[in-house]
Image 1: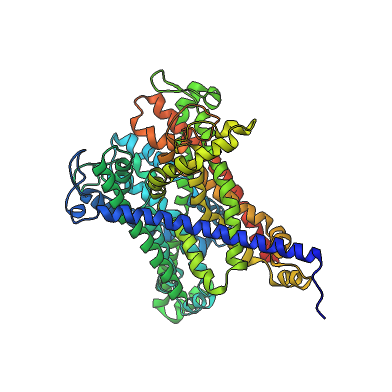
Image 2: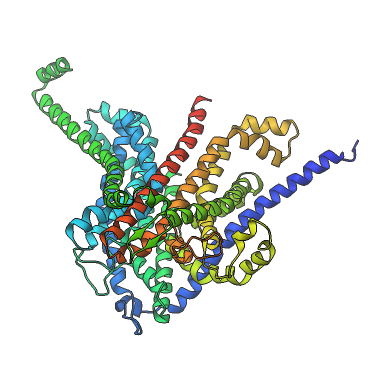
Length: 283
Length: 328
């Protein structure tokens, strides 16, 4: 007994098809944007790739050069930023998950931390300018390190808090029942159990700060010379890319594209690896 | 507690000492992690205080005039925040108008439309958008998207919408490619992954019985989404929108490339403008007087206030759903 669908049913089905089709179209738009951006970076960046990128420093206008000083500066500042921000973030996350739990203090910090996570990073740059650059009288790599650590901090706090809370309570009870003090239980049982998740958080944090430009603009500034000394202004990839891309010189544009390609590859590979680690680790 | 310790001490002398060292270690560790947690509070509080302090000279010097004036004249040292604030709000509004429907569509596609094998890869690809550094968006915007807008979109907008009353003024002007419309659209692309990921998670939280009931009554898939899932998750969906808004308001590098850094007040979306973040990024290191620098920091403080409120609202809206979930 098959009846012809009533007009109302037909209309509802048409609306259904149209709406779901539009949803698919929206997804397509997102994918097109992703591919368009990546293709632009790859095509322009690959044309400018070469060994000189790693062996020569950023050139003055009109001559050839590479990105060596910026790569080294970025590596140093990112590394020090992680060394400063990650331990503090892990400890703070430990407090939230293990001691604070649902206390008012812990809930306030979770709230603040989530806001910091999305807060504009240029404000972080202004903050560090006020407390480091202004009093010390000059831009420095250390100021950049502090700014990057502040951007990294909320990422690590959140991931540590979330992974530690996933560790089964029975593990804690077993350790405490064996007579372990609380702190040893945290260090010897909880951290190893939550290792993968915490590492993922740190890797995602590194990916985040590797591409951050705004907090470095007026903290580390830039330096056209090679230096290992973070007490000096320090060249770094994002600011070099910013300045070179906005310059009128073709050679600088090429270097900016090459830098953009290197940076994008590094950041995306790192975040993909971090997510994969999380999936295989928790499976 | 002390009674227990005494008994244990009687049984085995070494035990008390060990326990005491354990208790001391616990106290130190407890203090250490609490201190680290306090640093998070300090980071936010300190940032607010330091930036307010830096912006205070400008606030005191200009007073309310700072908020209402469209002037921005480094030579005469006359600064007003109206144009950057307007640019920030308009670009973020354009970003929201473009990103919210698209994010909603993506969330619906990923939860309701796509076959299972497609959901993982497409979801991961959309999340990749969030991983691309903002300066990359800026370069792409300046060298690829702005020329595209100038050649293919803006002339068409001007001829089509320019003659309209009221609305026409928004699309009047030369097709430069650089301006608030381009900046807003790029911001839109940037916040899509954040909004769509919140919306997708929210949709996945809708209880199965509700879905079954809707299908049982003969609802189509779209009716399930629009009449059941959206009303159920309304507040959390708004939370996602506010999260995206908070991101868009404070985004710096992407808009700095394509806004054109012009402090002239313009109604047209096609004309160069500036935003709070872009003005700071462009001008801070070149600020040659105390009041100039202080005005920029004051702008930063305003941005901080706006984004703090927006992100706090986002968090509260999303927390409501989490609480409702706990109750069910």
